[in-house]
Length: 505
Image 1 (cartoon, one colour):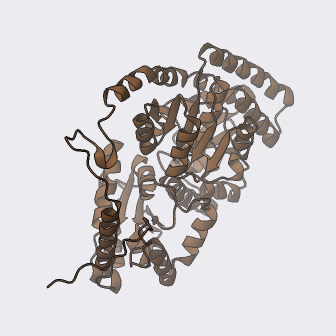
Image 2 (cartoon, helix red, strand yellow; image 1 turned 180 degrees about the horizontal axis):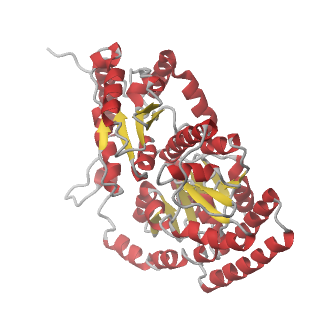
Image 3 (tube, one colour; image 1 turned 90 degrees about the vertical axis):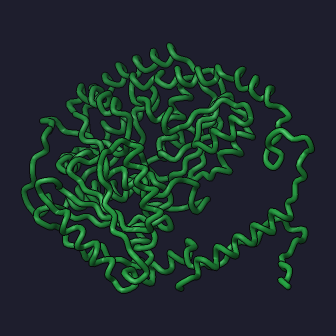
């Protein structure tokens, strides 16, 4: 007869944590170091520090670097990773309407351990390197090839005039997809900077005859235009936005007079600008206070005449305050997200009149975000970097806002509590934030969402008593919760998972 399961069903309701397992994060990180990837992992640890949480809940980091490559003209993208990962990541190209093929180099246990995978990647790149179609090919190692030490650094730097850029984007080395954007942007800037140092390069299609300000971080398309209008009276122009849309824009970005870290976590990119001898300023021209401080920083960095800077400040601040006064926001709003612009949005909300008690960002704290953090904290805002989902949900519970702005699970939690909520990425990031155009831009969507409170209350009342969690639905007899059974089968599933991972090790 089959022996009964011997699983402890004592008072401790928490299943034992998983130990080991060949695919655990720590195991893969150790394997990558043993395979010669220590220098890369050390650089990532320095560029993208963790804490207080190791890795906020987010999509696969390669989502970000893949997006950057897919947005660039004449750039091919090749992924090397597990088939399930590559399949999921191709969603990025469809989601953003890239209409671009994503290359894939498959592997088996044999090709991985014998080194044949690298040869397959090399062959694939050589077949793709057609200068009639591409300026660059980006090859990305996902988790398993990185942990196995597949040496993309050994690929040729250039084939048939096509640049070859190999990067490692493991989920166990890069905390968020936002920072993976910087991994590729920084690698491209480094390549372009080395090209410039080696000799003449192709001139960008569009190049201002004025000193430029390069803009770091993806932003709403109108924002660079607004910043350019703000800079014009100062004798400056807005330079390219990094990540760029084509290769030659990288040269123009590096040729700037100053780089503005609109998104302050682009650490690798900042390093390349500094290596090129370009100063960097943080924050952004958001709201009246933010715009004034940003223009002052720009003037101090470039040594601009004080009276000229003051004139632009007066004009901009007057227009911004007028726009803010015309679109007030009255209500309490919690803000959280994983894009890196959460602090900027919170500043604009506060200047619009909103009460913002909490801001959570999955991105790390850097010196380039200090000005925004200090401004918010001076107004009593709790600023939480590397925020976890649990942190953001706890803030909703603690502050009971009139509106919760956050990631999908935060929005889901808030709506279940009859609290109006908006998804940060699609509904907040997709609006201008800078200068007079940004002032008041959030008011329409924020106020409309808060105005739906009565509808949420009506839905909550209508569904009252339907049940939640194990009792969700309509029942003749109320289901009985059995936490010990849940614990037992969670332990069985964990044991099965570890056993399947150990196959072949």
